[in-house]
Image (spheres, rainbow, N blue to C red):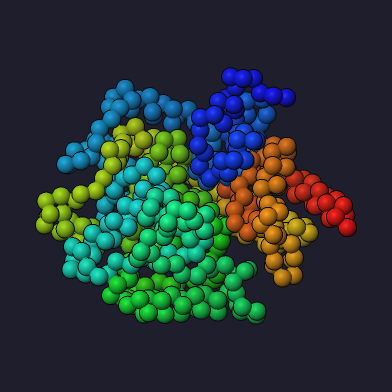
Length: 463
């Protein structure tokens, strides 16, 4: 049935350039129009409901309607709808939120800088690192290492950190001074017979060799997600961060923990850093900071980094960085209320209680003929589809196996997210119940079975 001429779908195709979308295919296929949300579900313009298995973009931690956050917006809009933090101005929501983040930090932190997205937070962290090293007399110590398949954003600098080809091709990225270490994915990158611990040792040795080759006096920082998100939900091998941090300490290289996805309970601890044993010098967060009801992100820096920034600003007369909307009072007020709700409902305790239902449910699919690896922790996970279970070989990308499964799943009332290597991500709202998780996994299994039947028919037809 052709949509009405004035429908949202037709107007969208005519007017919107979508992020992370094949623009030509979108002209042909059009959008899925979402009109409202309730709990872990969203509804399209035909009234069909879907379980949102990735909380939108890993972010709607409190689900798709929370009246307290609506009230927080309304109250702050009436009192002070906007003010800035430039030249020493401030307001109570910004101060409240900074204090709350410092109280909850996984390691001692000194100050908080606010931005509007994870990309801006990581971009700001890069600038702070360069500024810091200039201020303390190390102008050559500027190179930054991230990792292949890591995801840190889409600004020019943060997209350079991101280690995924589609974030670089045609954009003339990465910029100079950004290096990429190996991906800590044992399933695909370990040598035959290599244990997780031995794989971690090799990755640490490779990082050490990279820093030595570049010159330790030129390498400033190492960016890492506790669990890689958009690169495939990749958990590091046992002992990885312990060994990586020993290398960083040896060469006086700062550790930046990108907690944009992992923060605020996702991994079963308040921070992914706590789950994975990271002790960062700088921490970036966003997404669940406000349950993504309004855009806001933060960069926390420890005392050592802050002292360098402060000395530099004293010499220059200002810290010449910031955004019009840094610490926006309405976004900050929503984030404050969000953190209060997390405390009141014991979000970490809830995740710990329901996570086994999701992890066990997904792992039960490991025997499915299309499934190669199931991985995850807390309420984040992935199911990777493979062409050959024995060799771990993925399907030919031209087959678009994961995108096909995403489309099939829509008919089963699921919104899925496909990632590299035909991995399907799971990162539902943190408030999801065990019953809803069971429903989600059951629907996913049905979609997986439907894809398997379709592929068998296509294989027989090709003979």
